[in-house]
Length: 210
Image 1 (cartoon, rainbow, N blue to C red):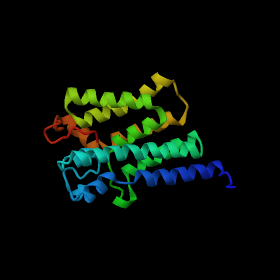
Image 2 (image 1 turned 30 degrees about the vertical axis):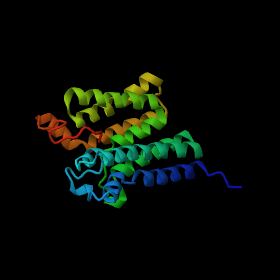
Image 3 (image 1 turned 180 degrees about the vertical axis):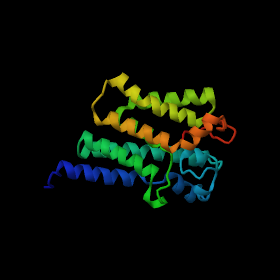
């Protein structure tokens, strides 16, 4: 009979496992296997679905989007089943960091929105629906993928509080931390938004979520 891990061991295992799951670069894998080249040499060089779509392959962009979301959800669900809600939050955060800073790619990863949504699906699916609808609405009105992403990320903690009234659970702090990191990863986009030079969807931007 296997021994029950201590709380500390469970958190360490969740962090390591979550990071390794999150660091799987579906954009790089999909484009290479399909013969579309190295996505890091295309467009912005980002490994997310938005940049994959710039190869002209919608199927590869969809695979990347689904894969990046699924790895975040999987990390949370596995740690939750094996250990505890706190471990699930740790695994989700680690998976998010793995996507943003994968060791295999010299810590140059994606911007995080797809993985963010995947984690939200696992910890509070109504919040993920609200965030996704926010992204779609903002993209439809303003035609800017980055603005849609930043708005959805910023409002997600408020959606959680409104829908569930969680104020002390680790899931709230996880969402806040991920939202902050999304803003950090979009610092160039934010500068362009402030100067009015951010490209619109259809003019150097794609319609897929980053």
